[in-house]
Image 1 (cartoon, rainbow, N blue to C red):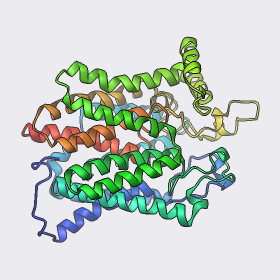
Image 2 (image 1 turned 180 degrees about the vertical axis):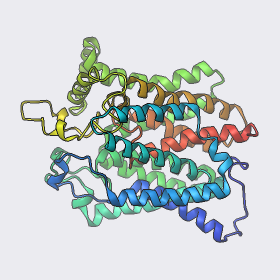
Image 3 (image 1 turned 30 degrees about the vertical axis):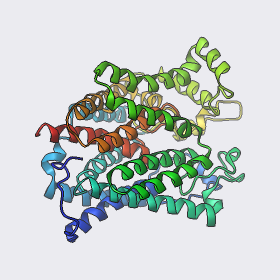
Length: 432
């Protein structure tokens, strides 16, 4: 960030506090990436059962880590951390709480709201741990190396747990696609795209060779995941992150930032809502169903009308017993879907249009203003561009995957880091 946000200390000062900061940073990011159950067995039939119970080990790890980060924040950076709490964020969680209270599974929704709040808190404190930009780059590089090493190790020595198999109970058609320690090739693909951005930042902020190696190995792995959305969006996000900082017009920035996510949602959700869009997609794409997502979108849209204001409860719709058990071979397989496969639609069906509006204020509108101020000021340009790349990938990929407020998603975690990071950049540069 800036020298005011991340005070610079000599590298020689490798003391206990540096170890604590670095340890907390690595623990936070690695828990987000690996979770407590990496390399899952996708041939386990229990994966098809209703999923409402939480992972006790994961919850315990999250609570312990959040407690450690809270202790650090209270002792070291409490004043700055408070500035991350904004009106849009408060209204977002207020809408989520109302959706939970009106849900058929209020306990489930409330528990997941707490975990979502923990994720945002962790992402915010993460930015306050490094001493400066170079320290931040070093820690990101180390995290990237660990992630890449684990993924390649799994492919080489445990392919049954690192490459999709024909025996996978949910999607056997993905056999042969690399996934590393992730549960799905799409998650692996998004993770590798993030690591490419990390490699670019490390190249610019610390060590060129390390940055190149991280980016190259991440791209190779991304290629073998055959995750189409991350592969196709990668050059788009790179181009946007090059153009946006060079624009002087706020209107031009607004158009560039919103154009791609809006276009993606028109081509995806719009294809099941409007006949002309569906015909255009059919002519332009070899797979106008988006690998069967269109059926899930129709199923979700049909249910939105039942609870349009506050939805079915935050993260308390998909995987519910009454939904899963209602499925039969003659019904839509949307009954058995894990999510809406669109972050915007997922927010509507779980928290309603009220929740969606509040969330988009925090996810899109607030960062838009902050990034313009950050680029208009002498802020840390490589860091601001890294945040821009994380944020834009999150906005774009959420047209195909339900990333917003998703626990255990490294893409959502780093999207939050970017949203808060833009705010910290503007605060420090304005002397806040």
